[in-house]
Length: 321
Image (cartoon, rainbow, N blue to C red; front, top):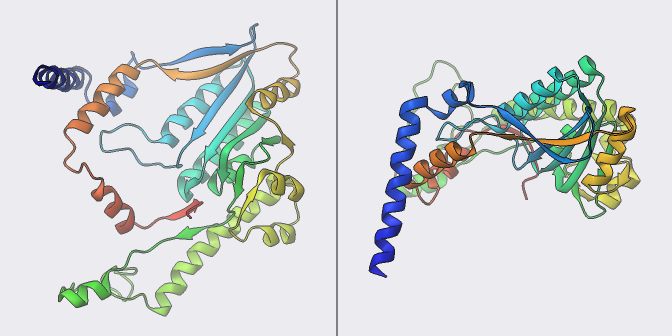
């Protein structure tokens, strides 16, 4: 057992030193993205020929934030992949596989606009394939599809906006902790967790939420060709199964990723095409940076991440039970 511990320690030390070596040669991970050695390689899933159908994956929470190791955000990576699709004349269709509860309003809207640009510039058909969850911002992106496939048990819906504020004022008062804000204007410390939220402040935040909500409704109206009144009836924040969503016109067909891909091929006008996925060629370097970050993590319990989410409120198109 003693020997095993030493072997594990040597491995950890080796990974740490390799991470430092790579960082010393190439810089941070953000620098690696711009390095000539960093490139997306195309993995052929099936099919043959010169034409391509790209399967693009939206997995997890939609965010525009890099992590603490400097790894690019989901929106940065997906935007880069969409740019490559736009520039590749051999790509004839896109299959967007969504397994996400949604995420940040701005990050979601940026990806949505990028997908619409792809349709406008290249006139590429987009077929959406929903995974286990495609809710809120995940559905926001799905509205760009010419067709939406889902499983009858897919969790979707949650059409709306949420804005969470963390407040510890009562606990602070009990502990005798006080925070004094010297401010230039009445609302400069709006949403402060150290005091109760006032009615005027609540109204301001509600106005922001309403604006984002109306934008969400507009996206569904245009993307799904539904009346605004109908969308307002179903966009009350509740979640729907795939079965329910189909009855409401929120999705088109039941089917998996393969069936969605076959439909994309039919929309492309091509008889045959290679189905490809993108993968970056520096996955080993990414692993080194991630492990280096893990072993040098000053917050192993993740408390700082929890605190950061609460102390930096954001408008969210996100399903949050």
